[in-house]
Image (cartoon, rainbow, N blue to C red):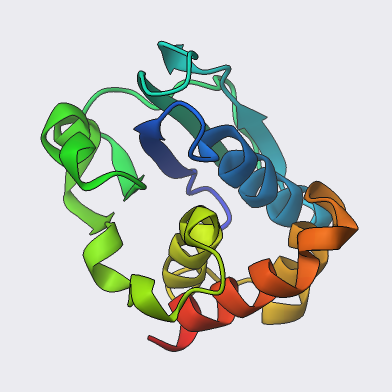
Length: 158
């Protein structure tokens, strides 16, 4: 991440899968690193089961919360069937992160797939694992900290 570069991330999935929680965690990590962060409200249907996406942008100075079409550096897709729906947001050099990159059967709780995919994303971003884990704990209820920290580590370590 250069000083002038804005990092663009789109998280997409279905309502109830933790799309907004995932973007809250990414935004939290970036804010705590001292970066300017903008996060969009969700797009699409917020009802459980409808398509949902949320944008996070961070850098030294960010003017808009919306990732321009075709400019996402990272597209994190929580539901595999949402890849084609959202692929247009990814830049030509962008990185697609999808559920196939996590061994879902190793998750302590299938609902932690969003955090496991953040583990995959963390391989590409210059934030420490400690910063990610602290953000996970700040954004999730204590009762599910351990299962989500394990999910993050599963995604991070492949």
